[in-house]
Amino acid sequence: MSTPVAVAIEEDEQANAMPTRHRGRTFALRLLSLGVVFGLWWLLTALKIWSPLILPAPSAVWRAFVQSVTTDGPRRGLAGYYLWEHLWASLQRILKGVGYAMIVGPLLGLALASFRWVRIVVEPWVGFLRALPPLGYFSLLIIWFGIDDTSKIWLLFLAAFPPITIATIVGVERVRTDRLNGARSLGASRLQVIRHVTLPSALPDVLTGIRVAFGFAWTTIVAAETANGIPGIGGLAWATKKENRTDVAILCVIVIGITAVVIDAVLQRFERRVVPWKHHA
Amino acid sequence: MSEANDAAKVAGASGSGHPLRLRALSHTYRTERGATHAVGPIDLEVAPGEFLSLLGPSGCGKTTLLQILAGFVHPSDGSVLLGDQPVTAPAADRGVVFQQSSALLPWRSVRQNVELGLQLAGANKAARRTRADAELDRVGLTDFADRPVYELSGGMQQRVQIARVLANDPELLLMDEPFGALDAMTREHLQGELRHLWRTTGRTMVLITHSVEEAVALGSRVLVMSPRPGRIVFDEPSPFANSDRPLSVMLDDPDFHEECRRVRAAIEH
Image (cartoon, rainbow over all chains, first blue to last red; front, side, top):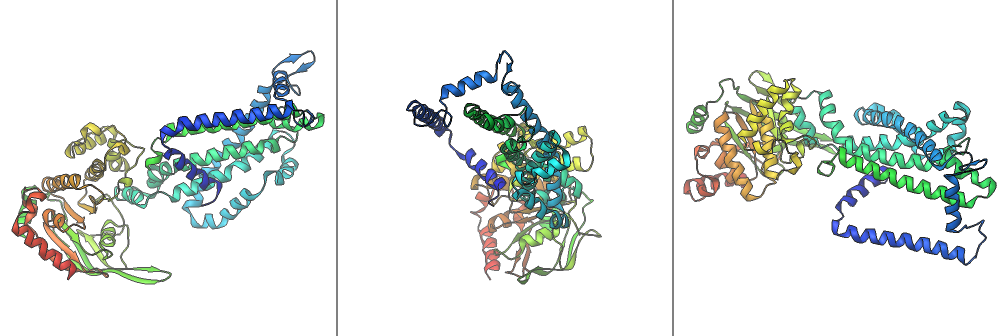
């Protein structure tokens, strides 16, 4: 059980076990660590150890941020788009890529878990795909699907569906035998067992897989936007290297990071809403 | 024997019940490491409305036997007949109460859990609800009908399991240590309720238990299985199933004591 999905499932179970009285202190410590990093950053730039080209000051990054949301004469935001336009362009690609993965992943996972021969034939390919770094096959996708959004969405989809598929398999295999037998002895047909027992029982794991998939897709976005990625937050980050805009690069890193954390928090909240019984399964 | 059967009759055993017959039943588990003869041969005839208590040392194949009766496991030899129908797969005429309440569906409310069997059979909403509410009333859970099952205590969850099985109106109730995971107080309470259910519904019941006292107090007939391969080595009617005394009071009865001693001897023999 060392796949990222299994780890995510386990971490999740541990996080829930954390007593509430520790949460306040945890939050305070995290705030403190954020403050320390910011302080160090400021100190390093104030001491002028390196050129601002290597490490710009927090104030320079702030100015880049202001630029990114304003217009000044011929300049409109950064690289012709406002920051939120970059971000929204990336999010749309993610939503499409992961969206397709959310349809294919659970269906494939269910098929793999239900039919032995499907598993024997298909599972190695899913494992192979999961092991590949997305950049490794990105040029192929560009050759096949062109340089526009189609190839990017394919890339994100291919990055996102294996974790969902694997989580679905884990979920289906974890369904208690008693629960399945119970439904059968109440008169459930094979199809009714899948619909009324297997699928809902696996739902918490599927949702965890979707969270992992969003995370993985988001880490792939910069790679996906290296080719014709403007507008796009990853494209913007990639473009900075031509003009040595370290300030913009750091701005992008911060925005990408915060967005990832927010997406995960939203998904966790959604999960608690949909499967409040998760830890009672 | 007669006393127990009378009780079933007095209770108004639905005349539709069928006898349960086990013929030269035997089961061997085959794995890569070899074969394990788990159960049998067993020949047994159970009249409608009987309450069978099944005891035996750990690993004697009690659970295997119950799973064969439920249809979860196909016996390697012999057959099980309910009436004239051979038992080959799980079906709604044989309800199972499991030891663990994880057999329930945690995303459904208590009532929805009880409605499951009727829903699977295609009953309409109103009929489902009426029936489920009647069964919830029978097990005393009316006030908890809309709660999620995981909010209930262990004892209440076992009552939900019993109610969802009863809602299906099965001929046979199979219970695998249904009270095994409960504390002593709850356990005793549910034992009383189960005895009452047996008398009022007239259903044929099979109870697997580790407790000799529970077996003797509840069963109209007590069966003891030998160590693996499990065969029936003790099969006697028990008169105590008709008693209204709670188990704790019965423990003071010398006759009850003597019966338990004999059963225990059969297990350890």
